[in-house]
Length: 429
Image (cartoon, rainbow, N blue to C red; front, side):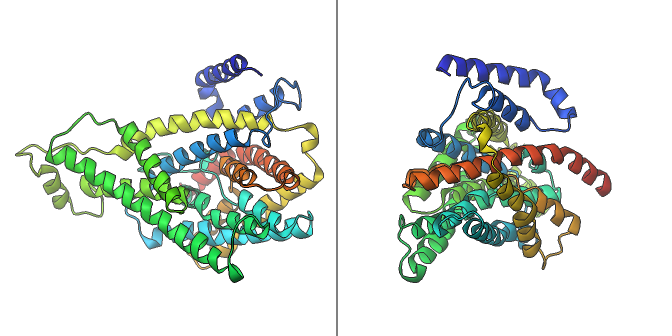
């Protein structure tokens, strides 16, 4: 399709979704399924009006998916409940780092022995499909900053972290293919790609989010500055910490998520964190204002609506593209069998194994094991490894398997999410 046709399709779809959203909310499916269906209808599988070639357009798709993931990570981070405690964050940390490792290992074994991929390519496949998605999993994630639902928090927090925690395995797979330096016995990979890049990314994010919160609070309370462009401040924070983390060879996805978390947590220390005594909060609000309190200014909450709108726009475009990449022969038994293994065995087994020592209710463990939605994050990693120089043969195999996994995740998780969450809500009540 030419650019004019693209504008017509996307504009018409946005208009239609804006009108029929109340109807979609009553249907037992998600909006992503509708976008995917339209993409498949217009794509080479049915009408053939357009075909998006991920191999030839990997540069464009890498940029689009990178921006979409960054915006989603920020939106997820600012919705994290307060305060951050080890007891609350233990389960999502285990899922984001340890369950991630188990999942990558299981997929690697399956891809190496059952699919016949080289070891490096098998590790890459595991790292590409292991992260859960902060873009397409909206229906099982925290909806707003004051949502304290435990299950939604666990999945949102996990998705916010594991888009970054998968990067060391990407570099490991590239190293096994001879495209990245691992060092003797993998020592360089362990020290640089795992320890330094992970810890540095978290540190840059926390420092950036905390600094912005302090700056805005000082301008607002001490100097009476108003009319700040919160959307620009939020986007500026994303760009700054991500760019700085890339320059420092750390994982930028982790930096952006933790920058949003730190921004939200620090702002609530100034404006009424439940963990702060009420009198102390009132004293902070009265400081420098005579007898009249200064209303709190929260960049995180004020910019959230804009970020979520950008997130929805990116979802429309990217899911349409996914539908336009699929041919009829894309649905091979090889790809379907791999998706079944990932959804029914690798994800549930990794979750249940890593949550054994926690007090997480078994019902939440089972739901977390099922709702490991794959999506835009997997597409980004796929484009990243293609751009890194993976051979065309391996790239085509990774594209084939990943796109089928993402498309099936949109369908099977999108069909099951509303009935399961509705039943879960009734049982909890």
